[in-house]
Length: 352
Image (tube, rainbow, N blue to C red; front, side, top):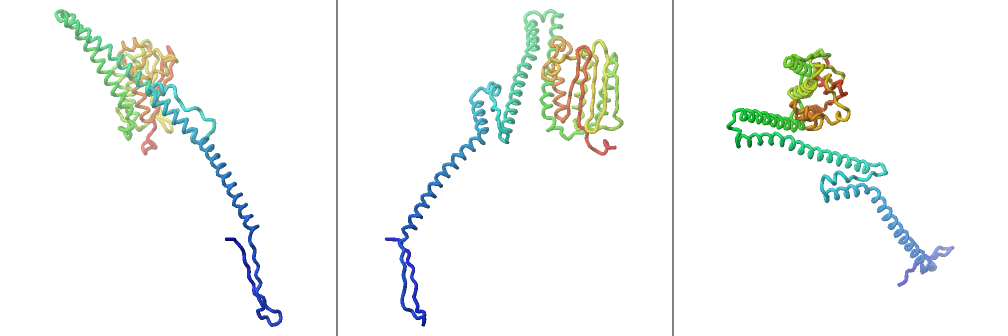
C-alpha cells in the first residue's frame, strides 16, 4: 500500500568484467508525495481564486456593456404597460456616458420614439382637423334641409338659397376629400412613380402660360435659364400639381400688387423652380407651420378664398417623395418666395 521507487543495477568485476552481484536502492518517496500534495493544493486554491475573479470580472463587464440594452428593455416595457401616446411623450432611454455602438443604439431608439410621437400627434391633429372641417359643412347642409322640411320648401327664394348653399358645401366637402386622398397618395409616390421622368422646362412653361391666360388681370414674369430639355425624376402630373398649388397661392394672396414671377434655373445636380409673389407675406411665427395639414395663417380669410389648408402640405409631400426640397422665404407685407428643388436625371440629353 506504499508508493516506493526501486532502482536496480548489476555489479561487474573490474578485471574480467564478470557479474559479481546486484545493487538495489529503495526510496519511499515521502518528500515527493508531500511536494505533490502541496502543489495540487496550491493549484486548486489558485484555480478557485481565478475562477471567482473571472466570474466577478465577467459579470461587471457584461453589466457595463449590456447596460444600454437593459435600459432599452425597461423603456420598451414601460411603453407597453402605459398608454401609448403618454408613454411616447414622457419615456426615453437615458443618455449614456460612454461612446460605443450600444450608446448609439440608445440614441437611435430615442430618435425613433421622437418620430413616432410626432406621427401620433400629427395623426391626432389630422383627425381633429378633419372632424372640424367636415362638421361645419354637414351642420350647414343639415340646417338648410331642416329649414326646407319645416316650411322653406314652400318659399321659392328660401328653397333656391338653401339648395345653392348646400351645393356649395357639398362642393367644398368634395374638394376636401379629394385633397385628403391626394395627401395620402403623396406619401407613396416613391413606390408608385419612382421611375417617372419629366421635362421640368416644359411643365413649368405650360403652367405659366395657363395662369397667364386665366388671370389676365395679373402680370406674370418668366425668367427661363433652361436652354433645352431638363429631365427630372418625377411624375409629370405631380410636378404640374405642385406648381399649380404654388401659383394659385401666389395669385390668391396677391390682392394689391398683382404680379407673380417664375424662375427656371439649374445647377450641376438640381433644377430650381422659384415662384415669387408680392402679396400679404407670412410672419416668422407662421412660416414653419404653413406646410402642416389644415393649417391656415388666417383661417377666416383662407376659407373665403376657398382653401382647405392642404395644398402646401400636399406639395411638400410630393416633392420630398421624389427626394427634392420645397422651402419658403417670406416677410409680412412684402410677399413670399417658394423654391422647388429636384434632382436632375443624369442622361445624355442633359449632358448635351
